[in-house]
Length: 127
Image (tube, rainbow, N blue to C red):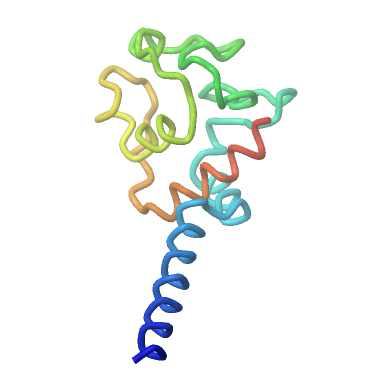
């Protein structure tokens, strides 16, 4: 009986650890997704120019619509969003649904793992 309980607890701990790891995201996978889907419009290095969208350097903690050198939509400026893991995840799932009037032309990251990976990458790359 004790062995069965111990085995059950061990399995639960392994599953919980896997869930935490998945939620925290993988920077390397996030960089690949970013390069495939985001880099065409956004740069992450402060010195790099962005082609279409705002430069993402210094993203976390910044108020939406205030990226230097980029004229954001009125909707973005008026949103009151301050970028952190949660607000970024909510927005990147479906930008047009999250913020009516956004000019970001992107269907969103629908897979939770990809979303977590991109956010993990952005947390590091935009510092």
